[in-house]
Image 1 (cartoon, rainbow, N blue to C red):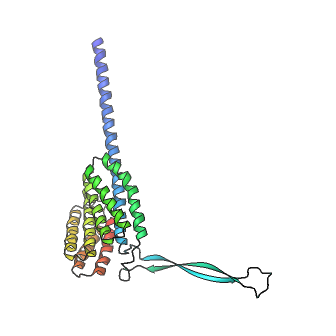
Image 2: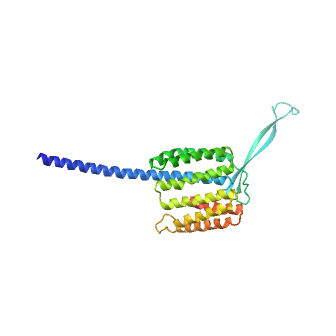
Image 3: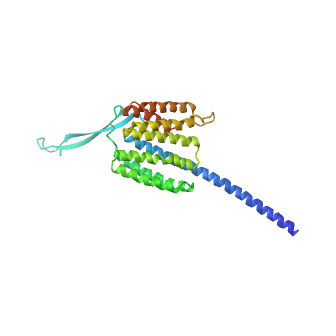
Length: 284
């Protein structure tokens, strides 16, 4: 009787432990999946911030129109005291009149030298706020700690080049920061298509940096690299994919147009093609 009782107890305990273990394992996997999705969103935000900062260095905007604010100083004459005689001196009161208008923001009429450094400095600081959270999450997903530290170091250099208003250094540091994103996504085992999209953006961004340095050969190498990365997406798109086939094809055409534009050695033409394709890629 005692033997049978103890056997039942042992089996019951074993069953409870097994069920508990299964529940723990399932919850752990669920939490890891949620954390991975959170990190992917954080990296997406960082990536878009970096692209916007790189674009702003040449006043490239995804909007067709920009809001222009004009302030005009005017003055009107008023009597200090209405009861005083009219031949007494009058005072002048200065007013500021503000007007708003919208203007087209085409590449060909853009001033590439009029850089909004305040915007870049503010967004460099904004990156710190996002990255502080990402560090903890990436560590939790066992991402290489040296890669995380290196990103932090380059982020410091990015902020320093913003502070010093050094356009070339800032572009190089932005591109260097972005190059860590596909690496992080690979380490957390993100969807391969997502990794290839980011790899494509990385190559396009590198070509953009080389164009700013008038290095057309390396720019060409990177646009070709972007097409090669993107081909892996095209070859693996199925009917159930969340990616629209029409949009996938459209981006492929835009990438080839970008690649062809490099041979013209014309920055403005390149910037037009770059703006078109990078906007599509970051919203894919």
